[in-house]
Length: 202
Image 1 (cartoon, one colour):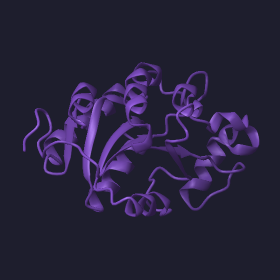
Image 2 (cartoon, rainbow, N blue to C red):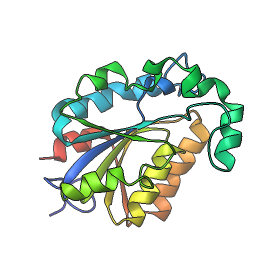
Image 3 (cartoon, rainbow, N blue to C red):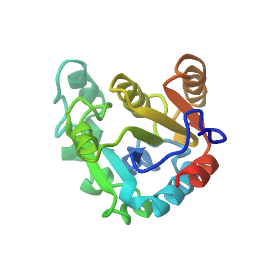
């Protein structure tokens, strides 16, 4: 069965909404702020309100202290010493309040790197629930969303990217990544707007 905008049919019971890193850590006035996170927030919330039980939020947790981490991460947290847990208000890792109020029933899975897959908790959670389709929102398009999508492709999930519910610090690389998804991953990534998701997920 074809669905307008969705190349591989409607969304159903084996689908979840995977919302990437919509945290205070990435909202103004944080040094890591993504300027248009507040622009996509209402769209993401509109989906969460309808599908809280089918929503999983990932949260990025920085290193505990400056210089901690393996390999290049050690250098990264030397550069971003102010963004380590020892130097942050603990509430900075929280989801943005309009999303946090849906937890529970929405689930939260923490990670310490860009990808949510390597630490194993997300895949185990999805396997227990027989999930095969991910509707992806959040940020950043060209960092943690990219790592999320590529890992999901490798693991064989159907990936539906909600293009007007993604955000980045860079318009240029955001646009470039959407082009890549359209042109290079068309067999594995469907790109639609939120209106399509809200009307097609039955």
